[in-house]
Image (cartoon, rainbow, N blue to C red; front, side):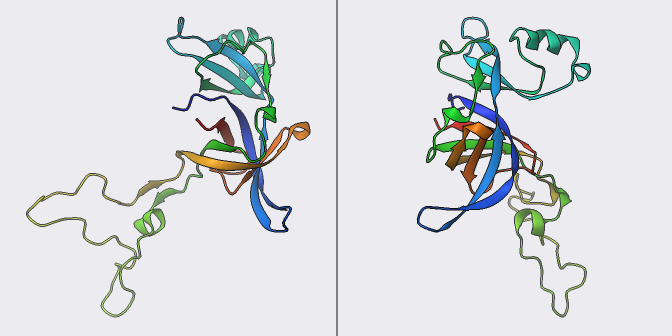
Length: 210
């Protein structure tokens, strides 16, 4: 697991910008932070070093008593999302300290983690990009089936991990080496090159490579 500081945000959507040389660059707009430090975990007490950040304020009536007490220690608002970022050391951080997009710079490569869009139960053509069976004469009700999944006498069973129909999407996905195109602290916005996992307004975590 990378032990670098990051930030929590939400994916606003995709657009494009023009680079200095006139070429078009597709970017994803992410609204990130400011994220206050809600808890500091140390190796002596919890067994590892980490900071817990909060994101997305929430009404008090929607938070239970234990969480209220937990978040009150930071002296900040109540937050819908709490996420931990493991670190090598936590000496430079304190409760209530706000982490903003200023920790990143344009051109830096980061890891972006999100939850992919759920597609429900899907067949092998959509889920695994199978080509399907022939659509010409002699083919009946087999156009999108995976074909034979068995083997001969050996091994006489279906191999583990065989690509089959099933649940698609709605999984945690991490993209590495995503390039930050622009940082806009006044708007709490990051522009990253290409696409990132999840739908618009989906929660994402942006972490420094390491």
